[in-house]
Length: 251
Image 1 (tube, rainbow, N blue to C red):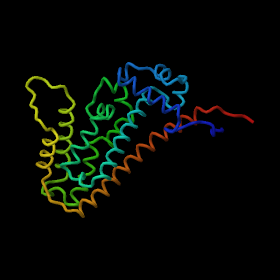
Image 2 (image 1 turned 120 degrees about the vertical axis):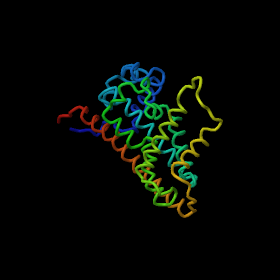
Image 3 (image 1 turned 45 degrees about the horizontal axis):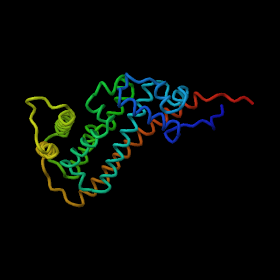
Image 4 (image 1 turned 90 degrees about the vertical axis):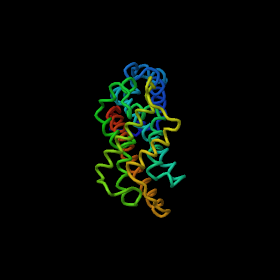
């Protein structure tokens, strides 16, 4: 089988157009209200071209969600590279939550927005994506690093801190993304409230410049490892599908 002429991966112009069209339509109508035929028509390609890269609509939309998670992590890597002090827990926790909520597909997975997610919520790789790159998972992965480098109190157990931290991040994500109703408690600066809650939970330890530098390097490395794992998963599936769909050339 000769697959040298098959375009695969996210660098393909056709794939990029399909993803752009899918994003526009899904944001307007949600996953359930969109068909592959509509996505292909908007991208000015044949429906078969879309199926060349993704075997089903849910796979296409999952690819779209995965790429937005990758872009979210790229933003955090760039932010930490630009400002090492961001690695401190009371700053990184609000940063991750706000950045996640600014990206509509990351936001949908974080807050379980059924209208946007549709069937992709039950995609076999969705849980893997959330477990690898959602803000709560990233922060829980950062917790052992913070403990090693002296950023948080080690009086309590890591498990208790991780549980409390995840509860905080899930709660703040829901509060920041929901529509306010009568009786809701509001504050002028939610980020400040989140920072204070993180400090109250984890303690406040005055880590110095050396600890900040070491933790930032480790944190960036953690983000890059998880980014590469998800990127490899997405690219491998597209390559596998494209090769399987390539016509057999007989000599």
